[in-house]
Image (cartoon, rainbow, N blue to C red; front, side, top):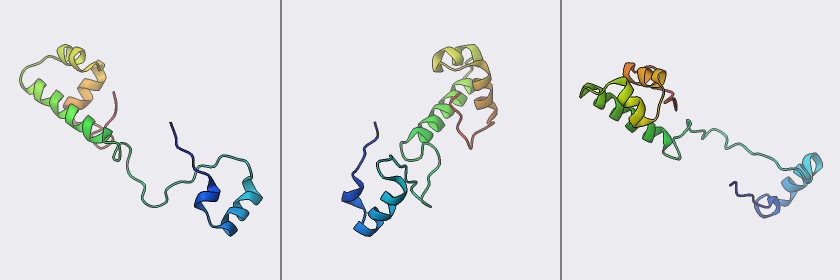
Length: 95
């Protein structure tokens, strides 16, 4: 769940007054700016999917069938095929 902070505790008084003129009582999302990270980079999800995909490719190289990989990793046929072929590696799709 998101953690909200009171703007009065964070913003200088003159900036708070300016924001209140435009959005008093509203909930605002304030983006991080230029330090935007790719999906999953901060949480580790991207790295975990990369490790999972590598395990899938290794199991396939060891002789596992696509059907076995589907059951083992709880993924669909198309997702396994994409992982094995290396397609969409930069986006680390969740299959």
